[in-house]
Image 1: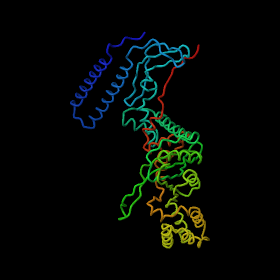
Image 2: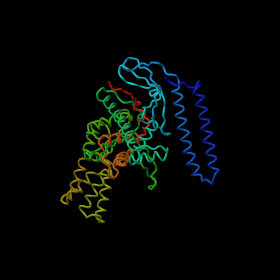
Image 3: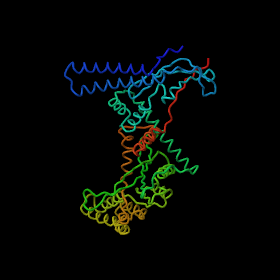
Image 4: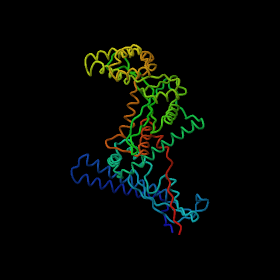
Length: 452
């Protein structure tokens, strides 16, 4: 039979908390006066006391919610009626430590499932972590260098100790929810023609793409990453009278997948960013063929810009092949040709390279690279239009989103684990963390008895 409850559980809770607060305050005061204490010592003791009080407060509030008398029966998901059995305790890990909640428990003889209605009301899963702890674990698992470091940080910040596998699981759940949301958006756009909700149309939207290798149990796999952003012109710090064009409002999308699927994911993110109504679209990238194939397919009207850094590297390698590594003559020749390239005189640079064609592979590679990308190298025109001509945003994105977390020394990921963590990081670095944490449905748990 169910035990009796206090006539007014709220008043009983208030009285219990007042008494505990008074006890904690008295103990802390006596401890502080018993000997000289530093601020650091008092702070540590006060934080521990605050956590204990917070844990009691959380458990007490949940107890108040669980206090009303239970109904004899409740509807079961199978269509029959579940019968009240008893108050059954549920343990939940929280940001304030473990909490036990004694709530009404029902059992259905038809389907042999038991359930506790309060679990759904409070939005938790018995035997698991609270939503707050789950989010903290996912955030730390997404940002820390490892899951072990994630739980060490959690312990330092909240005094809550859990095992690294909980951080791994929380991060993977959130990453999979992000992946599922992106795939739903892609399927809606490609299968049903439903466009993703778009933000305000930018005057000029930039897109950039690149790939970075990740070590997985299936071998080294390429993670394709896309960056979308706008720019702002600012006075150059070290060049008076000139301006720097800086990226802002960056968002990312990516996956370990084929180019076609990645292109669809990128287009959906671009549609969300307002590409369909943007006044101008610019694609900046290196010379990889798959990148420009996707740009031509999904953004045919965009201005295509070959990244200046990659273009200049080919010229430097050719200069070293012709005049010797690091020689003054190589430096002078390269600087003259770079000035021509900067002015959009690609034909002149190709002619200069052709004169040294016999000097080796580096010269031939530069000729091929410039010939294939000549229409993307009108740098004088791009500068006059105030366009960014470097792909530093995607280069930095690859480092921040992928390399910094997935390419630590000795790391070998499961393929699914790498994809999930990377997905969580793309939304975190895109300023969409709140959206990501709102994706997952509340976890539920049922209890099933085995047939005799």
